Structure formats: structure tokens, C-alpha cells
Length: 426
Image (cartoon, rainbow, N blue to C red):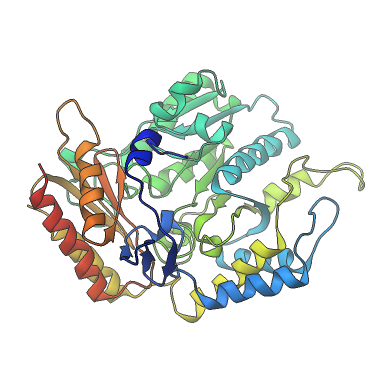
């Protein structure tokens, strides 16, 4: 099983057999409040009939269509809708089947772009410590968790990592963007000095580092990265697999933070997690640089059997309709404030060292058990589940990312349960 302690799971499995709205349902009928939106993806809530009906209709009309030298209407319609949601001239979409595939595709597009414009020495890619970019070959390489790379030995060689932006002494209990840390974007200048700007193809960061425990960008950090990348001809990629489609409001974090990347990766909320899907969204100049050579030549020799799958596109179009109709891309400022206040009400609760919030994302760090990292957070996860709430354990952090349809009463249940659990576990 993926990212699972398999022996522990088989000894005490947690199984869901159904879902509805804000809840998972166990085989014995228990309703579990979903504080994780599945895995950051079920933004519109579970088993929305509008989405499942669209899936069924599409399966009856066109169950599969290859994207190799062929096309179908849903893919072009969905690409256009995504481009309308993305900022500025990010208007060219390449479909994948996951966030991991989207990241590897984005890295290849960035490398191909540099090669197409004659910058063939630009082969290096830069990630960031504590970053997560999926588990395919490229994403694992640029990801900033050594524990994800170590078991596999040799991955991509031409990779560097920026320092991460977290400093508990400077930023503990911050709501939104921390005031401290913007200067850390200048660490890219260190890498440029060491490797030479002429060797660097791209920088990839999450606008909000999610899987590591919700680290919003310091004030000025993303703006400074943009400035440096522009100055030195480096492609800037924002990994919005988590933040895309309403998680931090404004559709994409790029819109919310008003910083324009050259490429966006997205997945998860793209179709409410109903069908595996991801996408890369590129700016006009990236696309145009690749459109060269004989007209019958393949400009980007890359793709997947199920790129732009018609059923996945149908689910995506229905998801966008639901999200737009219910105002979930923009978010309810009063509800977001209520969520933030509820999260920060855990300050002073037993074991809590820090709390971070942005949009409908929250995380709190727990004091670790000596010599047993992650044990206390996992105990919080299990304790909450026993009380009817699902949260995610990430190292010594507990992460909250509920469906965006959550109510105030359910926010109270979520954080009230967590307070009770934290006060009860060792």
C-alpha cells in the first residue's frame, strides 16, 4: 500500500466503504467527519451527484479516447476552463493522470523550453528543502524530504535545493504569511553563484508547502523568487497540486499571492478526486518556443495513455460547475476566519508547539516523543478517528484540509475533538 506502514495497517486496518458530503462511512456504519478532503482533493465534498452523473453519462457516450494524434471535445473544453481560472497568460494545458506525473511533465517542458531556445547547458533543476512534488523520478529528486530519496539511491543528478522557510522561533503561531523569511529566497543566488545561471533550467516550489505541514510563504518570498528567475532566465514552476482549485481561495495560489509563475502543476481538486487526473498549465511563451520544426513533427515527445481521459474531463467540468456555482473558488471570508480562529484555539493545548493556517489549510506541530518521531501525531490521528474525525499525520505535525463545504458546526466538532484527544494522549 502507498505511504503506509503495511504491517501495522494489516494488524489494525482502517477501512471506508462509502462517503457522503463531509463524511466517510465505515463498513459498520460509523460516520467519520473528513478533515482531510480525502487527500487534499475532495474540495466539493464526497459523492456529489452532479459529478457522478457526469461520469456515468460520459462513460456511456465515450469511454476512452487516445490523445495521441487524436482528440475529443471534453479535453479541449476542460483545458479552456482551467486556463480561464489560471492567472494571466497561463493558457496552455497538458493533461496527466496525477500530480506526480504533472511535476515530471512540467520539469520536462521546462528543460525542452530551454533546449528549444538554444540554452542547451541549462540542465539543472532546483527544488526546496521540505518540498513535496510527488513520487515519480523527477518529483522525488527535486523533493526536499531526504527520507523519500534515500531508499532509492541514485535519482536525478543535476538537482539543487533551496533552504526551507520555516523557523519556529521567528514564526510560531502565524496566521497566513509570516513576516519573517522573505530574505530566504536569495538562497537561489547562492545556487546560481555555485552552479552558474547558464546551467539552471527551472526552479520548482509549492506556494504553500503542504505535505511537510502547511508552511505558507513568507511575505515577499515568492515575489523575490519571481524576480530572480526573470533576471537569470530560469523557468519558475509553482506546484499547485494541493493549493489549486480553491484550497487557499482565488482558484489558484498564484492568483491569491499575485505572483505569476511560468508553469503551474495541478491535480487533486481538479475533478474532486473522482478520477485520477493532473495537468500542467504553461504560459504562452513556453508553449510557443516548442512550436517549431516541420509541421508534421511531434513538438513535445511526451504523454500518457490516459492523458485527457474523457471521463476524467467530464468529472472535471462538473466539478468546476459545482465549485463556481457554490462560490468555493473564492471562499467565504467569514467561514475561513472561523476556521482559522478554531485552529488557533488549540494554542496552549497539551503537546502543541506551533499552529499555521492559510485559507482552508491548517497544521499544528506536536512535541515529539524522544527517539520516536511521528508517534504522537499518529496517536492523535488514531484518537481522532475513534471519536469520529479523520485528520492526517505528517511526521510530528497534524494536518487539516477539510472539504470546502464544511460548516461552522463541523469546524467546532473537528477542532473540539482534536483538543480532547491531545489532552488525553501521552
